[in-house]
Structures are given as structure tokens and as C-alpha cells.
Image 1 (cartoon, rainbow, N blue to C red):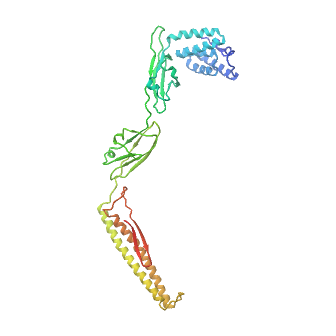
Image 2: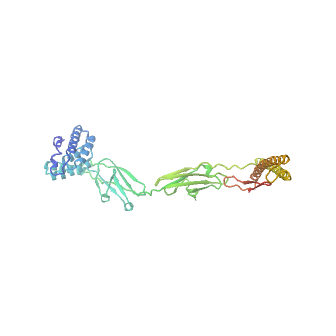
Image 3: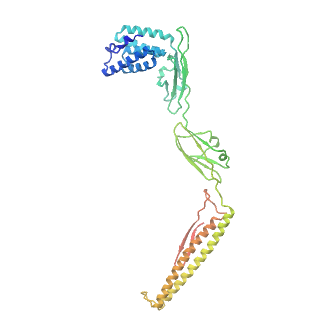
Length: 399
């Protein structure tokens, strides 16, 4: 290990390179010193991570590149070491550092026959996908590199491909180095597979008791869905979807679901509640009660009308010589007027009460009629309106 030569490696190589901020150079030298100590103890993994930072901060330092190449070699990453040796050779040659040129070129030549190689194949039908991106361990691989074998470290690599509107494809492959230079070995090949279209799927999951309902219909956004696609799923547009389920004799069930592009959603149907019909005994009792109420209402209306007529008669009698046009009355006229007002009030009360009872009775009779049609919710809403006049009492409406 040439640790001594690397301790001051940053400064000599900078003469022909760009100027470096002193603070950055100091930080890089500190990291380099720490990495050398770790390498001396054969702790290559943490040492390499530090040297990677150094190379990032001062990319033109040939000594740092040599140090990283040696570290990678000790870590067993021969392809990465070979790459760093070659870059160090170029930097050292530019800086006129002959000893480093010799070391870098010699080491790269030693490693080259041992390197395992990786080849990423992208078939034409995959290449034609708009916006296709292929990555190796998260780094984009340019189309120019597709199909060309290149040195790769003897580790597990992730190759992935993605494109707008397509499902991401990925695979893992492990590359192995050669045991000796004379070993022949084909490159490790990976063929990128076609990317599936990123579909948005809606599935309907239903209990058997719901699926077996006679006449059941499921609508998505108002369109009837074929039963074959309920659980299998159907392609839908991303966004909000309204699901509605109807069946004869059952209450309507509905829900709403929002699906993102490329996702799938499963809607679980709930049992449809049965619409309960009114039984015969209830209808009969309701009808009888309605008839009785109509009778009571008519009697009340009759009493109101009678009292109203008597009130008018008393008022006319008071005007017959007992009260003048200015409503000045003698004692008899005053008593007649008072009786007329009492009769009028009683008639009004009896009439209103009779009309209300009559309206309720009519509603009960109409609601209990078995021949009346109900709406989809199983409810019928008759409407009634009461009208009262000085001598009239009536009921109008729709039934």
C-alpha cells in the first residue's frame, strides 16, 4: 500500500488543473487521511465511501483517483477499480506525473482480463416505446450503450426500465469476475422485457347472496357492467367513479371511489336491503281507521257549518231593528251580536278540526289502497289541501 505517496497527492496534481477552494481542499485532504488509515486496517468499505467524496470534491486530483482505485480493488470491485485507474492515468499524464501514469496503466492492464462484463439488450419493440428510460443501479444508461458489453463489478445489479403510461420493469443479476485471465467467459446478458400498459382497473367484489339476486344490475357512471367483469375487473379512466346497484324488491345501493392512474380498486358490495311491503292486516286496520276518521271529519264539518249558519241568523236578527248602521245596538241587539260571535267561533273550531280529521282519514284510505302504485322507494305521498270559507268547508288534493 502506497499510503505515503498519497498523503500529499492532492497538491501536486493541481498545478495544471482548476484552482480549488482552500476550505474544500482541506476537507478533502482530511477525508483522504482518514481513508488511508481505514485501508491500512483493511476496512475497505468505509474507506471507499470517504474517497468517493474526495473525488467528487476534487475530480482532477490524480492521487485521489489512485487511492480510490486501490480501495475498490481491496473491496473486490474490480471493474470500478479498473475504471478509476484509467481516469487516474489520464489525469496523471496531463499533470506530467510519470510514476502515477505507470502505476495506473499497469494496474488497469492487470485487471482488464479478469473483469466480468454485463450486456443490457433492449429489443426493437421495447426501444420504440416513447419516453423509455433504462437504468443500472439507479443510473440512466444512454441508448448508445445498449447492447454493448461493459465491465461490471462482481455484485448484484438492478436493471430497470420505465416509460410514461407503462408499468416499471426490473430484474436483478449477479456478475462474477474471472478466476484467471485465461478463462473465457461470455458477458452476463439481460434482455429488457416489454413494459405492460399501466391500466387503471376497477373490480366489483360481491357476496354470493348479492350476485344471486334476480334481476340485479350494476352500473358504473350510469353504464351497465357485464357480470363477467365484476370480479375480473375492467379498464376505467383515472378519477372518480359512481357505482350503483339495483334489484327488484331491493333498496338501491351506491358508493363512490376515486382511482389514480395505474392503480386498481376493489369495491365490496353490501347486501341490498329488502323493501318491506305493508301486510294485509296493517292495510285493513289503516283503511278502517281512515274511514272512521272521514266520518268524524264530516260530522265535525257539519257541526261547523250548522254553527256558522246559526251565527249568520243571529247577526241578521240583530240588524232587524236592534242595531243601526253604525253598529249601535240596544240590549237585545247586543245580546244577539254576542251570541252570533260565539256561534261563529264554535263553528270555525269545529270546521277546522273536522277538516283536519277528514284529510287524515282520506290519506289513510288512499295509502292503504292495494291498487295504488308506489315509487321506487316503496313510498306514496298523497297531498291534501284544506279550504275554509264563511259558509263552506272543503278538501282538495292528489291521491
